Amino acid sequence: MADSSKVIEILKAIGHCMAEHKEELTALDQPIGDSDHGINLSRGFEAVEKKLPELAGKDIGTILKTVGMTLVSTVGGASGPLYGSAYMKAGMALAGKNEMDQKDFLEMMKAASDAVMQRGKAVAGEATMLDAMLPALKAMEEADAAGASAKDMLDAGVQAAWAGTNHTKDLIATKGRASYVGERGLGHQDPGATSFSYMLETAARWKG
Image: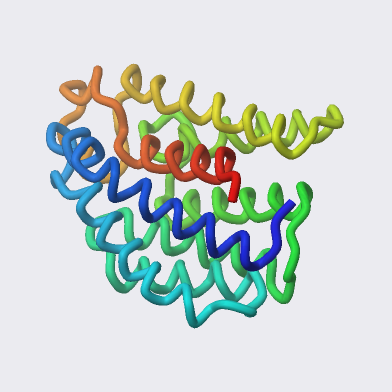
């Protein structure tokens, strides 16, 4: 499904996606957060891109752990620790591996989701990035169990992630800065769910 060099290229593409959607993600954050989600993530992935050349030839676990540590140290707000933990735990799940198949990818995604739940002390239904991550993981696990190809599995995950992201407009946030606005947050799409959906979509659409 992917080797180390492909993972590096996908991470670079994710960084470009975060830069491209920086203003949109920040605008989503304005009514319910610190108005900095897109700015912070874009800055974090700029720092990641600078480190990618030195990761050439490293195993996938090391690459992902380095991304996580870089995001923790460069991204402010809640998204730095959350995404940082997700990438670090994903890296631990693939420690020592130079290639990743569908099962590895699902294991990596589960580790990342578990990390966000643990770090954010959150579950699905609280208008967070988990409302995109968990439906995506479930859809991909079901597709894989049904014998789907990697492309079809990823497509199912992307579709579920965006559906979950859209559903955050109907949820009252109980975690993070968005919880401060209570019911006034209804109708607003969660920026973290949106950025995750863009990341997964970038990985799924990447052709190389």
